[in-house]
Image (cartoon, rainbow over all chains, first blue to last red; front, side, top):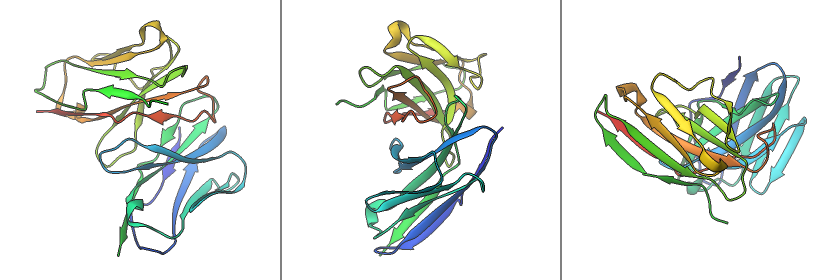
Length: 109
Length: 116
């Protein structure tokens, strides 16, 4: 099976940097995705990591360490609109995505 | 490019009633997924189609849930009869490739089901 852990809630200040961690335990790991989901809306794709290292995309970056079963999503220059849930999901072999429970981020002024 | 379309957006039914959801994926996308997302949790895969064939339905409660994807395009998900614990958002997603490990999924807006 697959076990994915991420914090339930986080709060950060507008303009700051926040790091959302995700740890996973799975055999045959292939890749890790991050999705953003605003309340009442569908998840939207943010990034995926297959190899170790950092993937940067504007204000968002995602890091993966396959040996440690660990990833993080880094959000810089936080804006109020970044308040949302952030979902970590992993793939194993050719099986579909398995999602974590998500981290609800609140950005405050 | 039009996104994944779903209808209805909201549905309220009483337990033991039946309900159906419809999904139209992004044009040309081979793979279609139905997820169930209970409040406060991540989406859980119910069924995956590649074209009009089922790839994975291991987590679909087959005694009450059914899904089809006729002609490899639109799909419907049915619950019959509904239970209180079926209250959730049902998300449809599609991906362009064969559902491999780095095949990005695009989600529709979801149908919020409330079972009373």
